[in-house]
Length: 523
Ligand code: ADP
Image (cartoon, rainbow, N blue to C red; front, side, top):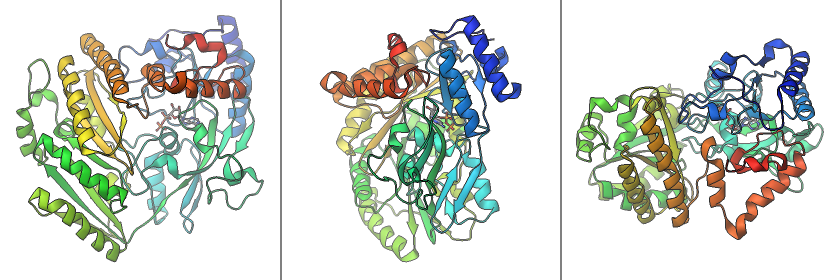
């Protein structure tokens, strides 16, 4: 059981007063502060026991006014708050804060679908709206709009977009589909961004920039505000969609295939994020390591062939989908086939979906949430966890190959299995190097942490940085963004100190510490 850890600057008496004030403002059922409550908010995939990030309490408001009341009390008592939408940020710390003793501001109960506009294809949502909930809503109300769901659909639409998560339809760059936020600032004011800054605006969800500076992205991966509503653009249901699985037999195939796919993405022929994963990507979702190998050290390369045969996957496998009117899809299909088939020496085998048919067999590729990829945490046995090191690369086959070899070597040195994938975006690749571990194996956890630190250093030396990271490594990753002696880091801190003078909102999030707690940086 987690005992109480208080944050710096708050003693036991101050904490008791804060909890008393919160209980009287919210009611006892919205202040969760027992040992069991604290345990519940510990990261289930923590590298170790997770107590270094244990919260003091969780607060579960149901309205914007309650969020404001929490912020007011937090300022008064210097109780730091860690806002989460549904707290399912698995692999990045889940609901746990960077700084132990922070209270989790859990917005799961603010989960109303406030408005869905079929004609203009957007939804106005509260932060607690989950992907499964939204899917049910759309299906029950026969709304012809598609979501962009991530590989693990347990979380929320807004939480995912704020962390720059992705989906696999043409609307898959989730953060870019936010259009206007409502935010409670760290001093408790309610602000609407974009066109929503006008009282009674009729075009809040239609134009992202508003008048003057545009602030939506300022609230993504930051600790500058608490998002209480957001407009999210959705994809109008297409007439048809077709999908093909492509298996590449050799490790080296990445060199040519990545270049071909990057070109098809850049030209807009393929409009979705393509996940280009090694065989472990599939094997770890359906089986556990001991089904294949019980030796020490990383999985031998010659096992790859066995896995590939059993699951009809290649050394690398990816899926391509095409969406739109039939004529458009047909034209694009021919272009994709001409680009890939001569190199593959085989015909692409397309599955076809048409408007009116169920989308379930296609799942996430057509915007239906699922959780199958969560099964990868069972790979090593014991209480499993995963953590991904994900630097951003230019979309080049040659650079991807070099990065792959460099990381593979590090995984082998660490004696860990190499789960590798590349997500090909419009003009970049996110190279996910996933470490799967058994939380109960202290030596494995130690090796996983050391490998992660090593990869941060290696990638920095190559000129690459991560797009998102786990709460254990936020300062280390922020440190790699070092142009002009960390000028951007200093700018973030300046903004932080202006907006949050008492330093109460998510201290340490993405390496941004308020003045009062800056000595905790890198601690
Ligand atoms: P999910 O809803 O997918 O489970 P989380 O709730 O874990 O995702 O949110 C991921 C991260 O996004 C949080 O750690 C926090 O930094 C940020 N976040 C989520 N919701 C909000 C919000 N309403 N306001 C500000 N930041 C948020």
